[in-house]
Length: 249
Image (cartoon, rainbow, N blue to C red; front, side):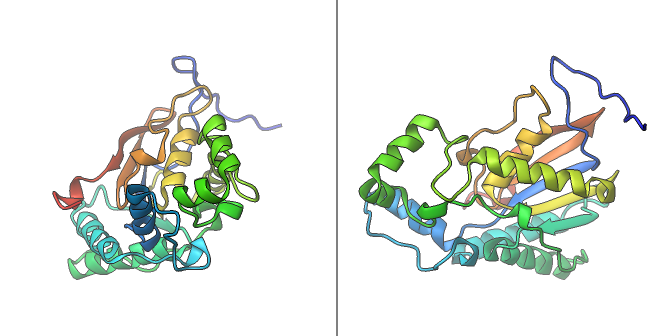
């Protein structure tokens, strides 16, 4: 029988033995659905609807493209010791487009990046029967479900046919475990969603550890979240950073 190296217990928690030297997760730029959801929340109008039929198809807004360009400039400005060796992307249109714009801007500035592979486990949280429904629309058409969401709490609420954030964490943990050997000692960039950032934080906090972020509001569009190796695990150094977006974010 082969035994793994003993992982130390620190402050009562067991760190997750993730392999990268540095892990960065970028949330996609603002999407057209983000625009609609924000407008619906401001006005309380349950009639506002997203044009796309599925969440996977939702594109970036014009502002989101601009944010992706800012991310590209941030990427191009990284020093040789900070640039990612590996990039993996969510398969959703808004994430794929964010990376395409980022890579194009970075290439124009002299930093060479190509297409990134996709992994389904980096997709956004699936909302089941509530997919693409704004909060006012849910409160108007399914008030009992809206109440249940409030009672259960965001982390454990699972809409009918959908996922809780805890469910997302399980598939993200599976991705990190499988990706580990290829990422060992390397700098990794993931382009994904707010739910994936939260899930990564929960996984990397280890058993008994407190994640650096606990709510989607802490992960703005086009934000950068970073973890660096510190002993046996990865510790957060920035969650939801938006300095690269400037005053217009």
